[in-house]
Image 1 (cartoon, rainbow, N blue to C red):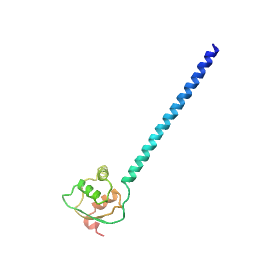
Image 2: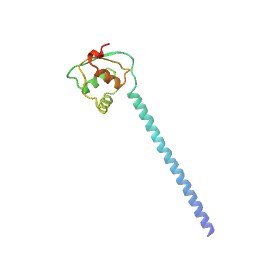
Image 3: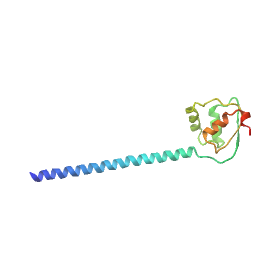
Image 4: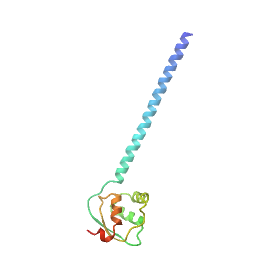
Length: 128
């Protein structure tokens, strides 16, 4: 009878140790997944916000130019890296669709907010 209790106790201890190892392994895997996701997200964000070369680009907006057209042209000219992120940022800042027609100077080294501010200046304010 005493041998049975000892065996049961050892089985209980072995089972608890096994469960503890499994929980530690699961915790490690979850933390590793979060770390991997965080690193990939940081790399993606860095890629989207990477600053370009320092050169001035003349950018013309006419009366019929939409925000989507502006974003597409900015991306094609290498001023911004991602037109969808630019438009999303404008939407989140409630800044869509109120551009003034004119000629503006922008630079690939500007971030999205700086580009947006430069394009919202009145043409006489934008002149150097």
